[in-house]
Image 1 (tube, rainbow, N blue to C red):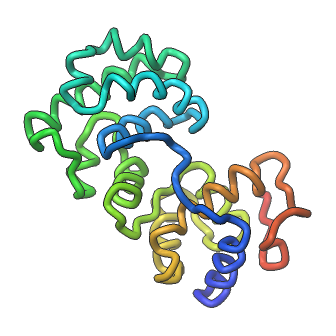
Image 2: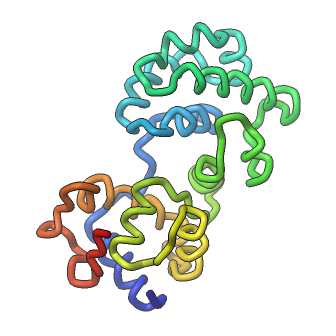
Length: 208
């Protein structure tokens, strides 16, 4: 897809999505990192339910280290893969304390070295916490961008690279939020709400 049509799509998405921000609840960058790690293969709603109490008592890497892996599990056991996620979060807290003075880094490579933080997580942190125009490709972004014809990619990395080439600069910061929210509420996986879609006339409707 060319940049002109991509701009038309994001212009329309902007008319239907008033607040293109993350739906995860957090108070600081480390809590955001924890929430994003927890959100893998889980919904933001389920993560927010689990962290509402957790984040009241744990705000820093030290807080999580003191809580410990078993204590953390008690708070997040309603979330899928919680055993592994708890282990990764405690490891990440210890690395941040020892190597980064308990501060979440703003570098892609440094973030991807943290246990449980892959490329998508790193891009979310760079975008949401540090205001960088990255493209975090989750299942929604991958599905929607390929379905509507923004890109034609076989995997998330190809999708990220292709999207970054065509997304207008004015939407660089919010683009992945627009695609996530559109995929979450309108362009759903099984039953997309095409009749309610503001970009239906520009969509290639590729359901394969």
